[in-house]
Structure formats: C-alpha cells, structure tokens
Amino acid sequence: MDFSILAEAFDRMTKTSSRTELTAILVEVLKKTPKSLVSKVSYLTQGKLFPDFLGIEIGMAEKTVSKAIGKAYSFEADRIQELFRKTGDLGDVAAELSSKKSQQRLSSGKLTVESVYSTLEEIAKTSGSGSSVVRVNKLAMLLDSASSLEAKFLVRFVTGKLRLGVADFTVLDALAVTFTDDKKNRDKLENAYNLTSDLGYVADLLANKGLKAIGAVRVTASKPVRPMLAERMETAELIISQMNHEAAAEYKLDGERVQAHKVRSGEVTLFSRRLEQITDQYRDVVEGLGSLPAKEFIVEGEVVAIDWEGKYLPFQELMHRRRKYDLDAAMKNYPVVLNLFDVLLVDSHEVIEEPYEKRRAVLEKLFEGAKTKNNMMLVPAKKVKDASEIDALMEVSLASGCEGLVVKNLESSYKAGARGYAWIKYKPEYRPGVRDTIDLVVVGANHGMGRRAGVYGAFLLAAYDDEADVFRTTTKVGTGFSDADLEKISRELDAHKTKEKSPRVDAKVEAEVWFEPKVVMEIIASEITLSPIYTAGLDQIRQGAGFALRFPKFTGKIRDDKAPEDSTTVKELMEMYQKQVRQLKKEELETAES
Ligand code: ATP
Image (tube, rainbow, N blue to C red; front, side, top):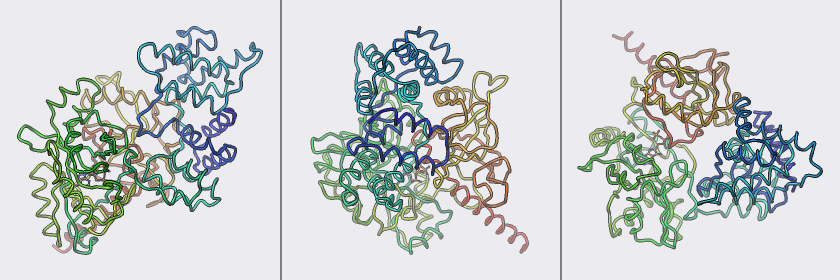
C-alpha cells in the first residue's frame, strides 16, 4: 500500500474538525487498506506505532530530526532550526526542502506503508550508545524517498506532532462502518476495546476474523482494562436510594489508581489510570503483589503516600515518586501503600462479569493468601443500608485522611471504560452549598506580564464534550498559582504549543498561544454562570450562552493521572449547574418561609 494514500488522507484530516468528516476519510482509507495492514494504519492515524500501554514511543527531539532533514536534503541543521523557529512547524520545513530537492532529483523511491512502519519501528526500538546516529540515518533515508507531503507527515509523526484529532472513538466508528456497514456495531467494538485497550488489536481482529471474534474478546493479563468510573452524588440520601437501600461503602483514597497485572512467567506490571506502564515508579508494591496466591491476575487499587506512622498523606506527596532517576531514594523517602479494591481476573477465571460482592470475596481470599503484605492493604469496605450509616462512615474516612467514599452497587459487574451509577463517589465538596473541584484541559494561554514575564500568566480552559469528541471552553484562570507552579506548567505546556487553534478545540475567545489539549488542571470556582463568550454547553440553557466559571482558582493540582478525555465533561458541568439552581431555589424557599 502506497504511503502517499495515508499522507493525502492525513492532509485532508488536518483541514477538518468535523467528526463525521474525519470518520468518512478514515473509512475511505481503511477500504483501500489490505487486511494485514489494518492494525498498523489504525495506530499510524493516531500518531502511534503500538498501543500506549507497551510504552514504546518514537519521541525524536526536534534537534535530532533537524539533523535527519539536513542529511536528506543537503542542508545545514542550524539553518533548519532557524527555519523551524520562523515557521513553528518542522513538518512544513521538511515539506518545503523536499519539494526544492525533488526538482533536482532524478527519481524518487516510492514509500509503502509497510516500509515506513518497519523503519519507524526500528527507530523506536534502537537504543544505547550510537543510537542517535542510527536513528538520524534511518529517518534521513525515509525522507530522501518521500514526497513533499509525505515528508511533512513523517516529520510530524516522529516528533509526536501528527495531531489529526482522531480519537479512539472515531477510529471505532470508522472500523464499524468499513467492516460491518453498520455504525451501530461500534458498541461491540467499544466493548472489546475497553477490555484490551488496544485499538490495533481490535481492528486486526475485526478485519480478519469478523464480528464474532470481537464478541469473544476476553480480559487478558498484560493488556490493561479501561477503568470503571464513578458518578458523583451530593447527599447520602440520594445515594442510598439510587442503590435501592443496600450497598458497600469504601473509603475513597486520595492517591493514584493502579491496575496490576501478573502474567504466568511471574512478571508483575503496573498501569496508571491512563493505562501507561508505571511499574518502575512503584517497585515497592510489586513484591507484595507478586506473592498473591495466583499465577496470573488483574487487580486494582489506589497507591497512597503514607507518613512514618502509616497515616495517609495527600495526593501531592506522590509527586515525589514521579521521576525517572534516583528511584531508590524516592522509594525510601516517600513510602507508599497499595490499597486494593477490585479484581478482574484470577488464574484464567474472568471475574470481571461477577457482581461486586463475589469480586470482593475473591479479592479478600487473594489478599489473605499473600506471603508478604508489605506495602499492601485492602480498602476498608462496609455494607450500608441507610443514609446515616453512609454519613457516619464518611466521617471516619475523612478522619483517616481519605477524600470521602465510593459507594458500590452490590450486584454490579465491573463495567470497563464506563462512568455510571454502579459506583458513586461522595465527597464533602459535593454536599449542597460547598464548592466542588473541576478538572479542565488547558487549550490556550496569554503571556504573563511584570513579575510573570517569561511564563504564561492566564490559561484558557475547556471541558470535554464526549459526544462530539471536542474540548469546549468554559473559563480563563490566572489565580492560585505560585511562581514555581507557573514556571513548571509553562514549560510543560510549551511542548504542546500549536501554530493555530487545534481542530479539537471549540473556542470563541482568542488566546495569545494555543495548545494541543493535553494538560489537565484542577480548578475550584464559586459558581457556574452563563456567558456569551464560552462554548461549553452553548445554547443548552440559554440561546447564545455557554457555561462560565465565577472566581476560578487553581487548586495546585495538575492532574497528570488524567488524559484530556478524562476531564470534567460538558454534561457534568450541566449537572453541576442544575444542582446549583436547585440549591438556590431551596434557599429562596427557606428565606421566604422564615
Ligand atoms: P477523582 O477526580 O474524584 O479522583 P476520577 O475521574 O479520577 O475521579 P472516578 O471514577 O470519577 O475517577 O472516581 C473514582 C476514583 O477514585 C478512581 O479512579 C480511583 O482513583 C479513586 N479511588 C479511591 N478509592 C477508591 C475505591 N475504594 N474504589 C474505587 N476507586 C477509588
């Protein structure tokens, strides 16, 4: 398959933000793709070579890529960097130099998807001394045979800036249409994807074995399962009635969610909430996990930092463990404990479909049988039948340093990748009249002035619209940041700068700098209001107005455990707005009565 088919499709994709159009282009491409390449094409359109959980990234630095461009087009790397500074897009620089060179070139080799993929794979897997030269040479070889358009997308790909805006669900839609002629089958594909977190695998299975094979997909140790998520509710009364007056209430620990997989060879791998490998970060919990009495398993828990007396510490303390070097020292100085709360698989028995009570029993048995319980505990759980029991447990949980409770439906199976009322989170912030935190994605910023010169001073934030798969703006925030916060956040955002507003961002207001939606910030605000300048929930409550936040303030938490698609959704903003209206009405009534 010619790589030009893909490059041309990528080019069309960068020019649209409509999900329907993106899907249609993808369907066209998939129809032209030989079945053996469907998985590779699915990964490539997402700027990847493998599923994220394998942790194999190509990530070439712009400087290294400049060297490869220089080599391919006989140009000095320094001048390439200069052009890059001017245009802000190394892909465009490569395209321009390539078109100049092709006028002099006698012949150009045709690139195929197979050859591009395998060279990129080699680049990704080359490591050790001398690897930089090898990587430069391999990329230069590809660029030498590439057309101008192909060069543009190759360079964007290797620098991690492909940015086609093709989310997982768009690929699933396109796969359903291409191979089953019916978009409704996307649900079946989504289920298989939720169990394996591997789009390429699902694509390959569908293309080569059909829908029946998709229905037979099961959880597998080593492939992370997309996490089950909780809805929030504001009072214990509402929760217990939603649960039909019987549920299990567990402490909601304030740490990092971890999914642990043990395979038959004995190896234990830890995945984050975003399903990235984080085994090295928490080596100290691996020993206990390895001693659970099972040859293979998938369990879930929350890693929490503890002090020397074993008391829980807040989430921020875990930041000390987010590093690549001096891991041993970090492990010693910042101890953690893994608090197990679920089990999905034990020794080829899938327990994911079992009700909560059964899973909890399996988990307890597993835990009891562990040879060492170092750095490992079971999350405290208690059966509750009325609101007062929930509120009483809430007090105990808060006193022991937890955030609140997660109340769980006794009969529910583990719903991979779904947010629903089978798990309900309950925090003091949700109670009426108290402000709740919101996780929003940074999509733009303005430069700081005065003391804040050199960093960004205000950020444009957006909520996720999960139906349209875009990010819609809802506020600007400039308070709550320390100087160190601003420095750190600005540098992190610089890596995601874009020349123009990303096609996945829906904004009416202007920003001096735009970013790819990547960084998730926790915000607190006094109220949700309506404003004509924001696009989240536009026209839903009032024509021409969207949701805005009053007195927004950064809480100090960058939620790097959350993907942008995990941020607060427009739907959730709507629920919060409605809750606020209910509360106001109640207060008005109370004032009128008194
Ligand atoms: P939050 O921002 O409240 O942490 P979230 O979007 O990360 O929420 P939710 O599913 O909405 O995830 O809330 C549940 C989260 O709470 C889990 O992702 C997990 O990290 C954490 N947690 C802590 N204790 C528990 C528990 N006992 N059971 C399930 N999840 C728990």
